[in-house]
Image 1 (cartoon, rainbow, N blue to C red):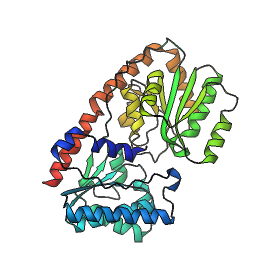
Image 2 (image 1 turned 120 degrees about the horizontal axis):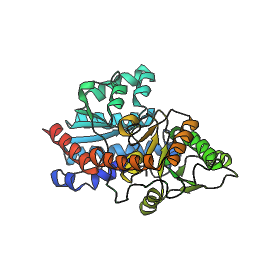
Image 3 (image 1 turned 180 degrees about the vertical axis):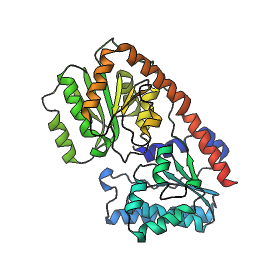
Image 4 (image 1 turned 180 degrees about the horizontal axis):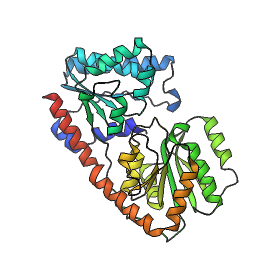
Length: 351
C-alpha cells in the first residue's frame, strides 16, 4: 500500500461519494513491487496498453462526465498519465488531474521541451488541478495554470486512541513509511534513533515499511547494528499498525523534499502523536511548529535528537502537543472533510 492506493481506496469506499455519483474504477495498479516504478521494461509497456484499453472502453460505453487522473512524477509514468488525459479530453470528459507527489514541478522544469510543452498543454486543458497544500500549489505555479488549481487536503479516519500523558514511561518513537528509502528521510531518522538509544533519550523505536531494495536494507541494518531497542517490522496489517500508533509517544518522519503530502503524518496526528517532520509536502501547513509537533531541517538528525530530548524532559509539553495534534486532525484532516471537498469538486466540474 502506498499513497495512490490509499487515496483510491478511500474514494471507492466513501459512502458519501457512492451516494452522489456512479463511481467507475479503471484499475491501473501494478502489484510487482516498488522496484518497477519508472523502469522501462516489457511488462510495464503491456500493462500501460491494457490500462489505456480499459479507460477507452469505459469512455466509449459509459460516457463518464468527469475523469479523475492521479499524476505520476517520472517520465514514463507521467507520459502514460498524459495519454489518459488526452483520451479523456478527446471523449469530451472533464478531467480532474491530481498531483500527489511533491516532485512534479521540478520534474517539468527540468524536462526536455519535447516532453514539457505537450505536458503543460494537456494539463492546462484540465478542468481542475488538485494539489494538497498551498505550498505544493506554489511549487507548480510556474509550470501549470494557477487558476485551475484546487487545494484539497487528504483526510483519514478519526482514532479512538487517547492523547499521550508524558512522563509515565520511557519515550517510544515511531517511523512509518510505505517504503523504506532515502527520499523518505530514512538515514537521518536512523542516525537519530541510534544516538537517542545510546544516550537513553528513547526507550525504543518501531520502524514500519517495506524495503525498497536489498542494498538499502543491508545498509540500514548495518547502521543500527549493536544498538538495542530499534525494531524493523516490515509491512503491517492495519490492526497491527494501529497498535504501533497506540504504543508510541512521538512520530518521527524527516522526509525529503520530493514528498507530496504523507498520509502517515495525519494518521499519526489522529492517534494523538506529536509529529517531527520536515517542511516537505506542505509539512509546516500540516504540522504547526511548536503546536502539533516540530518542523526540523532536512538531513539533520541532531535536530531530531534535540527535540526528542525536549519531549522526554518535559512531559507537560508532550501532553499538550499530543492533544493539539489530535484536535488538528479533527478540524482539518478528517476523512469526512476530504470526501465532502471531493464531492463538491466533482459536482462543480460536472456542471
